[in-house]
Every structure is written in structure tokens, then in C-alpha cells.
Image (cartoon, rainbow, N blue to C red; front, top):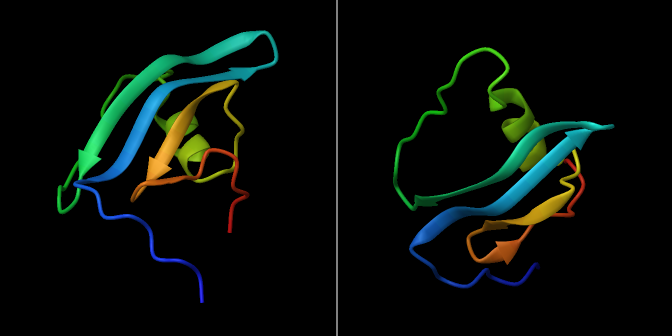
Length: 81
């Protein structure tokens, strides 16, 4: 059985996340936190990085730098499941 993650009031924390497609910077150091129980949405115009953000959070893309924490556990380099 996997260990229980530490209790935290933040369900998701993204810190200074940067993602590139080759030489093109798609995300440049974004940071945000989502508390447990919150209902949120990700808004932005075409090309703003919404899909890149979600692909990176889910492990489909690897960030160039930054950190993704889910329920207190670093998931930045975990593969998609």
C-alpha cells in the first residue's frame, strides 16, 4: 500500500513552471495554488498555454523547470498514468 500523502490545505501547487517546445517557450514561470475543495477553471485566449499547462500537470509534457506538488507530494517528474 502506498504511503499516505502529508495533510496540506493545498491540493495542487505549481511553482515557477516553464515548458518549451524546442526553442519556443510555451510557459514562462507560471505559479498558482489550488486549495482542497476548490472548484477552478483555466481561462485564456488562443495560444495562452492552457493545453500546455494541463498536459504538463498530467505528465504528458516535461517541464524545463519548476515544481508541481499534489497533496504535498512532488509529482513533477512522474510519468502519466
